[in-house]
Length: 231
Image 1 (cartoon, helix red, strand yellow):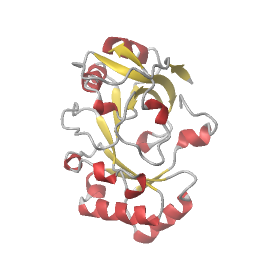
Image 2 (cartoon, one colour; image 1 turned 135 degrees about the vertical axis):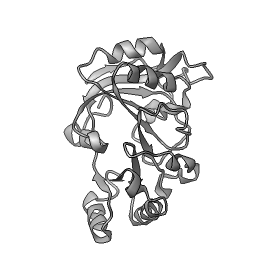
Image 3 (cartoon, helix red, strand yellow; image 1 turned 90 degrees about the vertical axis):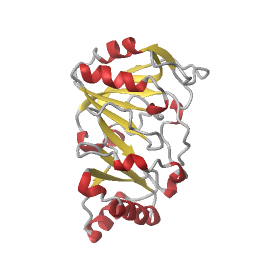
Image 4 (spheres, helix red, strand yellow; image 1 turned 180 degrees about the vertical axis):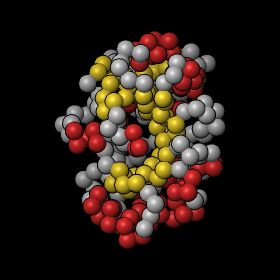
């Protein structure tokens, strides 16, 4: 499903000026989440993340990666037959080079989606990009790291994702959505932690409360359940 770059655990994101990035993998796959689920996309997964969510399924991106020039990353993206690019991690925005990379891709006419864990400010991100803001719930173990001012910067084309491990997380998420009027401002995605919360139960709670949100499942995990990387 695409090229997995060589592992280099010693290559951690540093304070570079933005001319390069530590890249974990670049691959071509089906977008499995959000309103673009089902569409072919190039994924650029960057190395590094300060968070340690309980259910993280990409822990291999914490340290593995190779440093690459921004131009090389753009050239790699251009090899694939799609105009949709997803910048993800780890947490992509901890690397300064992520911001000029997004701008370069947008200048070339790409539709760019940035998946961020929500603890880094999105204020400097090119406004043409689509932000997928993951608001960490208590069950993740990282709800104390949420950068709440990010919610005020959301626009109609952005999306908010909340991953839930049970009823307590659901009620917390419901309160956050109401308090910040998120469903009135952008798409809100609620996801059940795989193997922990039955998505059918989550669906029933949404219906009972009449929430204007979208129930999300990870399509790529349904298509290729045994594949851990490159999907």
